[in-house]
Amino acid sequence: MDDPQEAWLPLTESRNGNVATAVFHLLSSGIGIQALLLPVAFATLGWVWGAISLSLAFTWQLYTIWTLVQLHEPIPGIRTRYSRYLQLAIAAFGPKLGKLLAIFPVMYLSGSTCIMLIIKGAGVMELLFKLMCEGGATCDAKSLTGAEWFLVFTCMAIALAQRPNLNSIAGFSLVGAMSAIGYCTLIWALPISKDRPSGVSYDSREGGSTMAGMFDVLNAIGIIVLAFRGHNLVLEIQGTLPSSLTNPSKRTMWRGVSVSYIMIAMCQFPLAIAGFWAYGNKIPSNGGMLTAFMQFHGHDTSRFAKGLVYLLVVINCLSSFQIYAMPVFDNLEFRYISMKNRRCPWWVRIGFRLFFGGLAFFIAVALPFLPSLAPLVGGITLPLTLAYPCFMWILIKKPHQKGHDALWCLNLGLGCLGIVLSVLLVVAAAWNLAIKGLHASFFKPL
Image 1: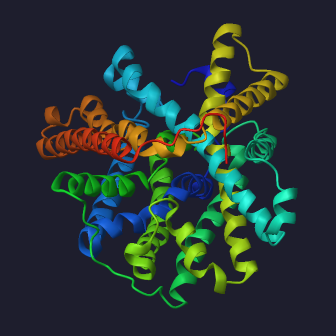
Image 2 (image 1 turned 180 degrees about the vertical axis):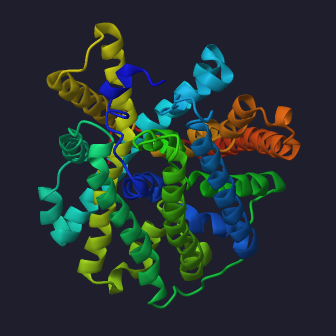
């Protein structure tokens, strides 16, 4: 049976969700600004291998989502629900190993994602401001500093973050989903409606040596697999859905996953293909489609269209902040409830949100280069997406004991391959940092 304290925590306080709210949450958490880098991966891999890699990554991560959905309530008739990734990891791997494997990836994918949303969202807010005041010396004089833009974004995000539980932010997730679909569509539809830059080539980028070329390929694969996000929130989203013996939550959740990932595919595949068609090897490695569009087509695009793209990115960052921050709020309130054995008062709940907002703002200002480390740390957390769900399926479902040897082999193979891929991506990211260097500017946000 569920722990009675579940009804006091933000993630599970309300279990009145439905297919629509699940779709909103999955889209808001699943589509992010990192998808704008997909054409950069195609520039290294080329048309064929880029399309193959994107298709395989999409299928693989969709399978692991299906696995997580099934494991949310693993034993029919026994009302045990794993509404947090860490709970499922502890149930599968044991208390010590489960915490060791899952705590860092889960906290990174929640807290650090919020920090990077502050950095990216504030940066785009500044671009939107400069576009609205038409640039120039007067505009620069009126503009805020980098830290002040971070503060503006953080204050807006925390002001919106006062909703009590995950179900109550479904409206924010709907806005986040619509804005993500909007800017992903505009950012590829606008370039293909215009002339391509002269000298566009579709030849794969070659590294300076065999070793450099191999690491470039691995970094491109990393861009593709890290474009799919939100696995750390799948169980949490499913935890907002009602469940019964006749209608278990996995049915409702899988309908939501099916709808949302059809829409995610309709955003990311055209973005990758049309983006590479429009810019080829000219697409910048930093910034991807957003930088390329403004660099090559900003001069012949209306201010309204450019401003709309910027505005949709900012809205999506603010909305995504809400759902990625919710596991952090849940963890903070869990500590309070464990000590006091009573529901968290409203003023303590507000205090926790203000504390997290202040901490995220401080880290964003102190480490404004954090997005440069995303491929490295993303490779470290990759098993949470591609490997751990497969291993947890084996340990909890024990398919080999039920005559399902093929399913056992499939999960074991995918899990091991996910660990190997994680190691390779970490090595490639470290190599890239060693060659290009890390431009660390502590407490100097641009």
